[in-house]
Image (tube, rainbow, N blue to C red; front, side, top):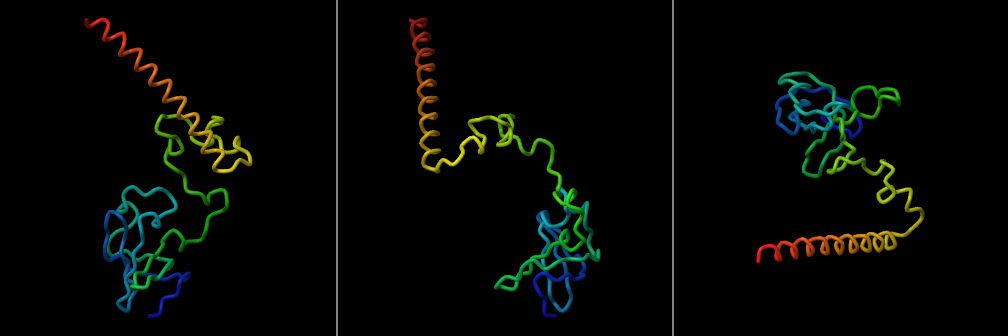
Length: 154
C-alpha cells in the first residue's frame, strides 16, 4: 500500500498510549495519531475518544524519512463551520501565572499594540530599564527592612 500525504484512510486502533494511538492501515503499515490530533477539543484522557480494535478514519499528515507515519483523526472528518472551527480552550488558559490577563488584558506594559512600530532593540531597552528600576526599588526595600531588623536585635 502506497500512502499519500493528505489522503484519508480507514484503519484499526492497535495500541493506545498516554500520548496517542497507533492505527493499522493494512499491508503492514502502522501510523500514530498524536493525542493533539484525536479530536477538535482538548483531550485529557485518550481512552475517552478511542478504544482498542475500533475502526477510525485518519488523514495522513506526514511520512518521515524513517517511515514513521503521522496521522490525524480530527482532520479526517468534515471541517465544522468557521464559528466552530477553533477548539475551545480550558477555562483560564489565556491567563498568566499571576492570574492577571495575558497579552489581551489591556495592560499597557504587556499589550503588543501599545508598542506600535518599535524595533525589538527599543522594546528590549525599555524592558531592561523597567527591570533595573524595579530591582533597585526591591533592593532599597530589602535594605531598609534588614536595617530596621538589625537595629532591634542589638
